[in-house]
Image (cartoon, rainbow, N blue to C red):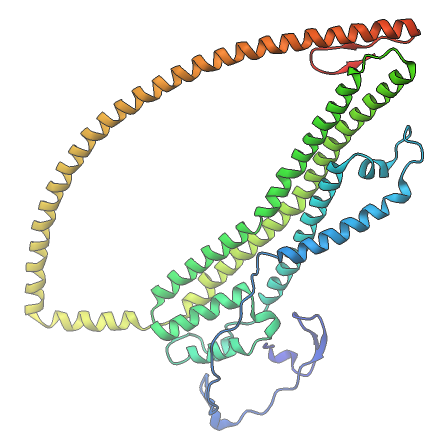
Length: 427
């Protein structure tokens, strides 16, 4: 890690560990080691081989799962004191502990997803701290060429171990090591663009599990709704005239409806709450990648000097002094134009043949598709009519059951129950 000269001898804060330390004063540099803006060192360069790179986007599956299980258990235990002693007056704890397994699953997936987001936030915070490092210091030279690139790479290897394993430092280190071997700006630029795409794809893939949670939580709520409605409907099929049995049936009806509505409500609320921090974290990581790309494009690539332009200029100046080279180049150009014309003719003929075949194939595909659509439409109409018939029979049977129940309630002096075709019950 480097610091500015004005901070020498002062107490500063470390961007890696947030600890306080004092920067030593500037040493007196020997004159024999300084020549202009370049600094020479007699020490042999350290052996380079990179370092083990962590996954800076994905979090550990089993570690996040373990934290999710523990936090979920603690949450459910904390809900026990807010349980209602009387089920007729529900409290907050009843929604989480007395509505079946669906609410347990919804809360667990929500907590697991939030644990993943917190772990990703810690990784992103470390990436932000690593971006504060002076990776390409100006004191090592105003440009990076084949002679000075080794010093810049050695400087990267001297960065703090906790911060050098980051997206930005890894990308710049690999780009400089490629430049040291190939000495070509174009290859380094292509490599940096490819590495940017790899990092972006990795970050995008790290949200796959969270997207599954956002899909599964409301689906679980709908499953709880169907389960609660099933209990409510089955409680009306008793058809008994016993008052105690009827009272138990009505209690089961209201309990089933409570499960149906509470599970859906909880699932929708948890998925909505989870979507906001997920969007914020995804935006933060995308902005971080954009800043890294901007640094490589605006700061690193302009400093690379592979001396290719000067070599090309030298070759062109030598070619102008050789008349035979110009004549040979002219003849090669004429031959190229003749062969290009022949290739264009062949390509045009092939294009016309391909167009004819494509037109015939398109006509055949359209006919087959239209036939399939007609057949599918006919089958769909038949299936819809059969479903409508079965649905009418179901409502007729259900109305008979309700009429029987109403007669029993009238004999008991209670209120009657009516049922609408939308499936909602009312008194």
